[in-house]
Length: 403
Image 1 (cartoon, rainbow, N blue to C red):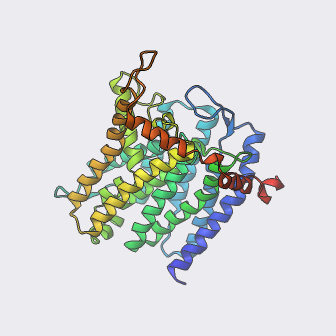
Image 2 (tube, one colour):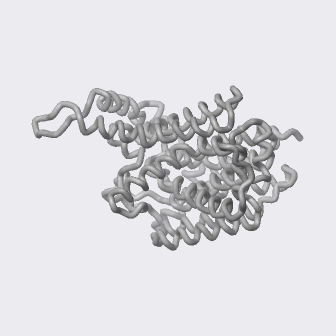
Image 3 (cartoon, rainbow, N blue to C red):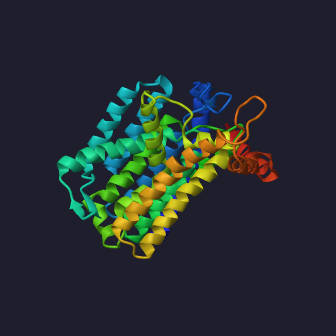
């Protein structure tokens, strides 16, 4: 059986399982009042069930079970156990609202245990500025910080419908392309399975009205850990060597794929600390809040930010295909990462607070700010017939009606 056919079988199994699991999880969350209630900081205005990550997990688990039979050397025991642990931690946090300290301690424990049992950690920088193999005394702490940081970066971007799940689809698709290119069957299978498991949730999260559900901390922590698995795996000697042989700047590739969550989180946390606040104090300073302020709809915001991230990925891909050095790939990706997060956010906030002064004495925004606001109005897809048709298809499918 060809690898392409195996990927199709695993994807379909994951997709069908997640689709069937969604209405079951939705009913359970409603029955037990596991919902996200609105407040001054949040963008929704009514309680929404918050266990979508469980449905995604069901799809991933089904795909992983198929991998055991279809893909050689697919030893995923520790990956599945760690993903399960991260999901349970997130669901616990959704229900009990854990303290940041406890949440971080458990996350460090799960990431550390995963690294210990799998041997996947950052063991080389693969030629960045001439640095290759690095000591475990440096690589293991660096891996812990990178892994936990990635988990929380994905968790922190979950602010508008379709953003975190849409990012997961884009990022896992990017990882899948790279892993397929270098012949990493296990990793490419895991990435493709995750894409398929996310698709049903994405449709309900974006288009659902009666069936809307949030992915929750359980889902974002699990998804963030999946990104960390790919990140640590790619940078480990077990996988990274095959990428290096293809001229891939491994660090540049992971930074490009995870660009917006990583750089936007760094910007937000740095700004909070400069104001004398905790880096984990919630506020409305993320990139998606900027687009909402410009009048973009939720899906318009998600599409705009994902296109920015996709642009960085495509630039990196072009550099790699053109034979750019590993240093060049890394430097360009880092510059773009800062530009599309730090630079763009600061530029647009400046545009918002300058320009002609209104009757009340406050600036009304520059022409550039108003141009983006016009784009925001065009993103109100919810008013169109296509949107309403998709909403009916999602809300009125036979599995949801059956419940």
